[in-house]
Length: 519
Image 1 (cartoon, rainbow, N blue to C red):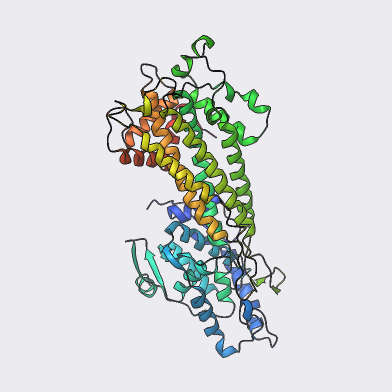
Image 2: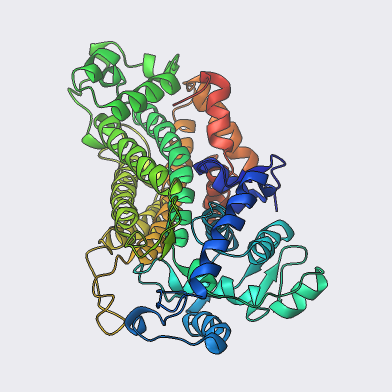
């Protein structure tokens, strides 16, 4: 577990994507501002006043969903809250990753700290303590339709506040009953009061948390894909002329300009490129699209990620609950919990991730085809026929790309009615977020295969030397695993090492050591 020591303060302003990642993935400390605690207490006073009203108020003195018209007497309201959380904690399947649950928890605590939900201070303090102590509820893969937000995942978290369900404790990574973990941490479970059950489970926090993590990861991966592209252009004896700034300016798409600038920077001062700069030394008129059009594809992906970041920013500034306590003290039902805005961009990102991976795999394949590699041995093999070289590494990349294309099918159009037709249109944002996480992971692996292949192809261009940035990247890859040509060896460890160099930032850092900061 890595730790970020910068404290994230909740309740006074929207969180940033980087703050979500810092708390979810790197266990940055978190606290709630004094002003936010005051707003929490004020909103709770409003709810307690409504609890005594003879008129029924949704979520305070009524049932939920299709049972919203059923009035609940005082003596059953505590049981109502327990029943709500227990019944909605109905997830199934594998446990989702700790960082996803921590992101979900952080975003729910942030909403509770706005003072718009009416939760009690005691309940919020316990939720905050779970984050601070590294006690993570076990949340399951299936259960959310993204209708009233991520009901089932959030309910599994709320269950822990009652001392029920299971958790994983960061200190030793063990899974244990929530009651035992709370007791060991010196924490006492709470008894939920009016409105608190809804306040704990009504929100888009799970899908939004996964969106934030994906945006953070895709930003780095797209820059790494630019580096891999430049190395492929270099190793395949392609041209960087098409990446010229004035050519890119003829189509002023912002992401395209950034990607082309990255590729120019990585290819700068390349002896391999200079070896065929004379037209007499190169008979090809144009490179294939997977080389020539990479800034256009990567740039479109970049711009899509930034659109998604805009939507995430709006959602991070939101206080989502139903009903909600307004600034003037009204308690109003609303539809802000519907996950459609988040679900749409989750689907969009899965599309662009698949497309960037598809182009990466095509560049890998060009290195292996003797008819298209411009003088490299078949499959970059040491003894073609006896050795298969990187033949099956390309198969692996192709298989992942094929799966990513299936994952790019949108989840957000697949609404399915629930709750006796009360919730008759749902977002499926949780499902969209989960398939995006799988797609982002696959993209990192596909780009790693390209980097490994390009490193071997460039080595085979010796005695020609690569660009300084390329040389630095190859050195970083070699520090993780083997990239040099030679007789066939166990391939999986080499590919795993390249993948690690991608996800831990080593490839990006190495390139920037020669180029300066890349976009």
